[in-house]
Image: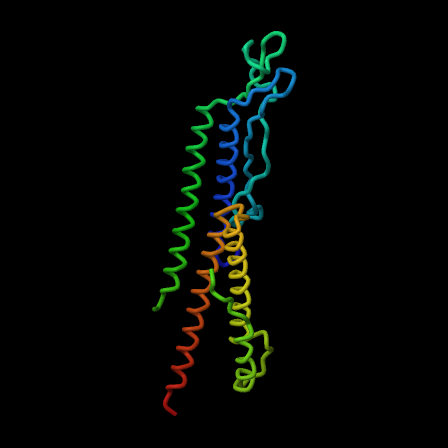
Length: 135
Length: 101
């Protein structure tokens, strides 16, 4: 860990939650993306977070995005005969995304991002206070 | 940010001075001059990375606002630390110079 270690650790957390918010916005943007029934539906994006460092017992170096998992390609087969993409049976494929889930995750991601920003600011204030020792 | 980076060139002039004035033989990398030069080099790197993020922000290439603000804050704190250390060193030097002989 460098001289300003906690700044980098908080920044890594902010990066993870920024990616999560990006993924949620992608899911919400595509919640009405309908595809023909012979194609896979839009797959929900799920961010996988991973801790960095700290295996040898010390303080770790924060978090990072290990990857993006994709949701069910089956989606939801919906009967909508008037839809331009409907097949002979009148079915189209909608993504398997629940808007209430996405909004709940958005609140969690936003609050977690803010928590990391708060830690960052407190660490910065602590470092600045340390510079005033003996002044 | 238009702050011009503090290069090691400004400090190299203190090298011969400290080499002439020191009493005990020491390697150039050790001692106060060496450590302050090293600190200024690191500070220069932090500032140049913050500057490159600022350029990216101006040209619209910045991927993460967080990266820029973290780099800028680190550069700011490192500058404050370096200035504080330098001020203390100058203070100590002045204290020694004021010593009655």
